[in-house]
Image 1 (cartoon, rainbow, N blue to C red):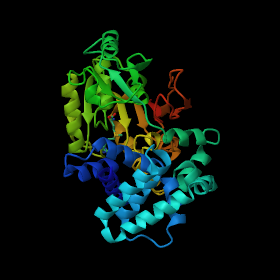
Image 2: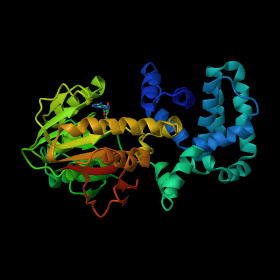
Image 3: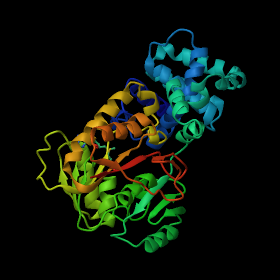
Length: 423
Ligand SMILES: C[S@@+](CC[C@H](N)C(=O)[O-])C[C@H]1O[C@@H](n2cnc3c(N)ncnc32)[C@H](O)[C@@H]1O
């Protein structure tokens, strides 16, 4: 276990230094030896970041002088997470953590031993202290908790709690390749338990590696949250329409549209590396789009001047509505980030609007629960554009939402949708 702990500490150190978790994970494990259990490293890393409000609180109490070696400090976070949330014996966790510490900084490994033993001696009393501070009570930075309270007087605690749970693994059956009834039989035959939540969306009860679900290579399904699957419906598409997916990678919504409608789709993506993912997904699913590897901007030089009937604008955002999938972001984001996200989102809306036909519709989407990226952006946009009118969206009954804001739940993430009609 000590190697998994050590790798988890290295990855967490990178995240706390500002790196994205997926990148840090790939980088750290690229040269790891074959005996490192990547799934164990992942589980420990995710768990530690989920509960870091608690380990921050404990480290403040247990360590008087700052630890200079940041990886060693991350290792203490890892061990505290394991001692409070995992089922191993205390002895195993501490013994293994000390072995990991020796590899990180031999001379300072005693410190890890001393801190962890001190914690264990006073565990019960220390844990009782979690409720004293919002950060350790909820496992989010204080400013995040306060922002949530301010914006969701009734639901803030539920939203925070769900954000610390394990996310559902939801798949979208590709009706172009297999009928839902047939695919369901394949899952039953393979003893994979699932819950059909809507039409062709189902939740796999015990999340597994995607390759272990039958029919992945055959393009029978894609992994996509149910909330994200709603985009194709909200666009109110008709076969033959000209449609733009303006922020398309990795292609979840592009492929969702193409599986259900025979439209002429342009998928735009500024990031060439991410655009490759769209290509891969289209190929696996047997679908085609007009993929343009360029960005939406003021000039839109890639555009052939044929106005679009529909535009899907799924903008880059804080990802605060999918924090249970991206456990790093709550520690990476800063309050000031929301000003920049909002500015960029408004600019993208401004740059997309001229491409829309009169009477056409634009669907604005984020996976954020914070209004600076959602209602505030749309309100500012509508003030500047007299020809833009907010439309109505009909959410399915099973979807938890406050107006256009989906509230993260056991069945779906926290997305925001707004439809704008051009007069
Ligand atoms: C939230 S993601 C889109 C997810 C995608 N719609 C899906 O469902 O799989 C936002 C994407 O917009 C891209 N992007 C950012 N700025 C852009 C721009 N100016 N033009 C086009 N794409 C942009 C990002 O690289 C990123 O891939």
